[in-house]
Image (cartoon, rainbow, N blue to C red):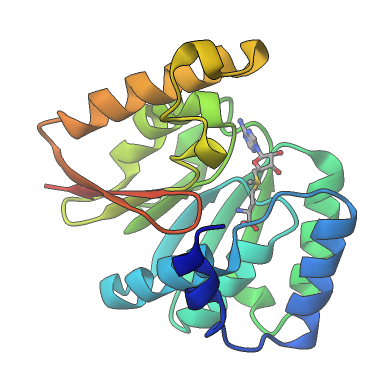
Length: 210
Ligand SMILES: C[S@@+](CC[C@H](N)C(=O)[O-])C[C@H]1O[C@@H](n2cnc3c(N)ncnc32)[C@H](O)[C@@H]1O
């Protein structure tokens, strides 16, 4: 963590008991959930955008879905997760939250689900799933975003791996990092989007649809 991140982290507001329990659960069971300063920043951007319908790719145990729903009282969230055990935990945690009626968890691989089954457009799409697949997620789900909508993509730094020389990247992660680089170059030049990096948490990319 950078010194500035530590400084920012000192201002993080207290969370309710359920969220603290989820943070502890994630840590104990090695479930990757969004960093606290990352989710705070994402939520603030979402408040400014004020979407009513949000699609999340990568639910894990439902932490970010609950945090987004709490930050945006008028929002409805659909969130997709392929790991059956995590889906179960997410549904359980969400059912205990005060925003349960506004979050729907879909179990399945986001690259395989029929998007017609989502039957909606989404003002905001949050992509936080398999890192090597970002372009595929983007290409599949961006048609559901209307002009003026936003796609938010987390982990663009890949915990510091994305700006390393490829020789320094562990072999088993090279394809993932190559895919991430290709995706970044592709989206930055995409004529239908204005995109910018936000150096928050593990790096957030924000793509505004023209
Ligand atoms: C970083 S975690 C999500 C964390 C969550 N957004 C949060 O901050 O609370 C990524 C999740 O994406 C899921 N995932 C990865 N690839 C997926 C895919 N193709 N379809 C659905 N879920 C996927 C993983 O199983 C994992 O639980």
